[in-house]
Image (cartoon, rainbow, N blue to C red; front, side, top):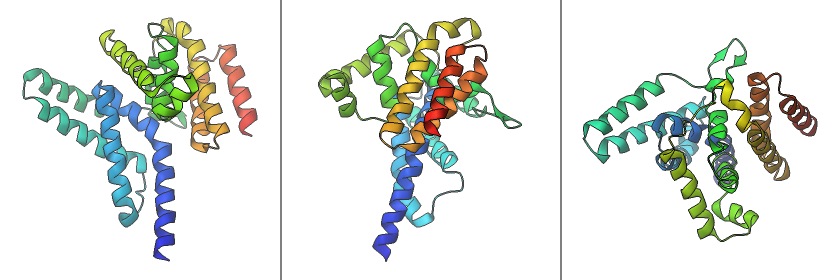
Length: 246
């Protein structure tokens, strides 16, 4: 009985973590401005959850629990790296960003400009990035595919794909591409890429029976329509995704 319970608990926890992970990575990237640090801290939080939740139970707000643990880990890492003033300022900036919760709701409406995951997708779709890099990074970070899975899809080796991901992250850092939904005058140049990515994420979730991915793609497409209500292609994608999800 205990082993059956443990297996059921582990399965439930894995499902919750899978549903929360992409948004958590996006939030940590916004807070730290460091892609690799964000992913490492999220992984650390996930490992803690898998170790503790079977005994403590799944928290009422698992996403908030994971965010808190990952953020504390990121702060610890930044403080240990160096005591130089620049790094201390970086920690202060991160703490200030954390005081401004993303994705705040007004009534029942969620502000698309402050949604971390939508902002991360717009970052990945910046025109300064190579197309293959944009797609690979989105599949890795947002859809949660492994490097091996993405490499097979691109018909390249894992080593080649890893270098492609690394180059794309470095380009984002070196070009100073901000982690945010861009202002209105910069939306048009990224719209087609964002639409393609959202449909790609939906298909990945729909084809693999990953309900959280398909549901997240639908949620993000709705946010995109809220952001760009006059964009016919966005409304068309929302109609298509809603129909397929029904």
